[in-house]
Length: 585
Ligand SMILES: NC(=O)C1=CN([C@@H]2O[C@H](COP(=O)(O)OP(=O)(O)OC[C@H]3O[C@@H](n4cnc5c(N)ncnc54)[C@H](OP(=O)(O)O)[C@@H]3O)[C@@H](O)[C@H]2O)C=CC1
Ligand SMILES: CC(C)=CCC[C@@H](C)[C@H]1CC=C2C3=C(CC[C@@]21C)[C@@]1(C)CC[C@H](O)C(C)(C)[C@@H]1CC3
Image (cartoon, rainbow, N blue to C red; front, side, top):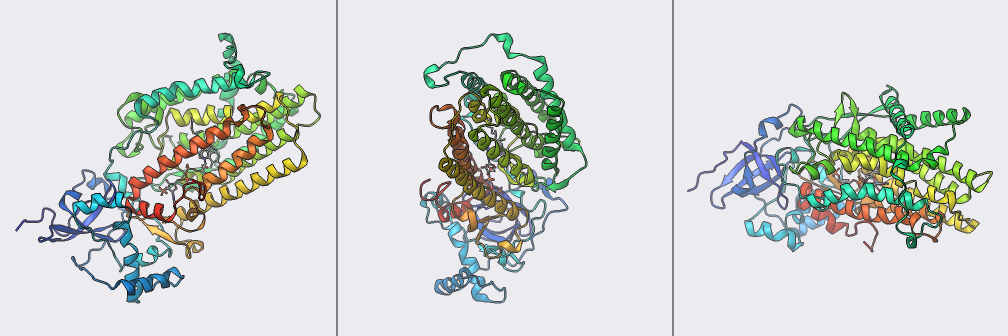
């Protein structure tokens, strides 16, 4: 009779079925006939695992942090056979909104049954490998309050370390994004070249594709020391506003180490002061149309800053601890890692470089540039006030930025902040791409007027508002849920539990499509391009780029979530079938 390799009571790493992730589990018992171990995960889920799905993690010792939630063991091998009709009845009662009671055995059964599809998916693709490897039996622990979680009842507030245990142990090889090493090399060269092309193209009297390529200006016109000075001054001003001890301190999501970082979310304050500084500059007769006339030089200076920053980030990541590195971006290939970003949250003392760059100089700079374009339009076209198209573009994008800054805390639960390393892609994206390409519509309108009739104007405003509503509501819903799943507003919502302790929302906005926030954002992007008319493709660049970005982001997020949540994610995808546009995509 084979002896169990892992004795009862041992804490080991158990693979979550359907995923490549290992979680801390406690061995509850071993069945020598089936050669299966009964293990319990930190969230109370019990499974029977084969020996090859268990390992002793090298990081086990590190993970035993004081904040860790301890799982209580219970007697092993309690296999329960249940009547499916009884369970179905109870499940229906719960679906109808009845509160599951721990004392009601029928409902308890249903709670367990609800989990069965997670491990016995109809989705053959996912199910096959598991089945061929043997039997898994998922049973939910019932004695510690998890009952409510399963049925969308308030989830326990997430404990640092308890929710993010997955990746801490197993850093499974993360597939390379962006076309891998060669792809990263391509993007490194292509992205700056593309920004240059857009700027040169929009400068042409007729920026149509027939005028491609735009004339290449003499090399000396690329450089202006004053432009570099302005860029540095702007970044310094933003840095100063960021470090001022004014405004709220917000907690980020718990890191793999269990630690939670704090962020000063005073973006709106920074915006207001920046606006006052710009107003003061105008009062002192500073000609803001300089931004329009020296757009190329300002972009080149910002590019230089982003490049230096990326080199600094890459070098400093060499001395970062394992737990401080992002899961992607540490492939060992210099080009890929430089592009993707190695360190997750590079900080100089309390100064968070990624958060700062994403939310401040480029984002607030975007509004400043748009405003300068409106002034340039008035100057070039001899107008008393900016055109209605220019006003729409300015107001729409201003609303987008102000909303982002007002809800700055919500950025802490986005992919960039939670998962992506900080490297060239984000440094360049934040400091060059956002301010110098997202402003293209306003730049275009300076010399390419597009008068709007009142009904068209009205229709565009309605489109923007609808998009904004979907965008804001869905982002806030997810952010609030991630921050406090026990919030009463989620008590009637359906969720799917995952082995990480986090749940997935399956009703509300996140039950309509898998990325409702992208849908709202795309509608807004449409509303930003429409005021520029259809004469040229150039002002539609943002719309086209954004579709590509969000479709790619969605698929990146899908694979990340699949890796994190395993079969629970498959269950979510089966329940919420469309990604971004209901019934279309
Ligand atoms: N203007 C621009 O250039 C850009 C704008 N954006 C906008 O930024 C915002 C943030 O986008 P982004 O960071 O890409 O992604 P999301 O804000 O959509 O975050 C995705 C994460 O949300 C969590 N999640 C996914 N599904 C669920 C669910 N059903 N229930 C609960 N949590 C879920 C997962 O993280 P976990 O489970 O780990 O918490 C997932 O990794 C969006 O509105 C987007 O449109 C994005 C890119 C560019
Ligand atoms: C091609 C290339 C270099 C891509 C880099 C992508 C970045 C430009 C974007 C990644 C995610 C972003 C977000 C915003 C701006 C663009 C980047 C940095 C954002 C700050 C815009 C304002 C929104 O309200 C937002 C806070 C939701 C948003 C977050 C994501």
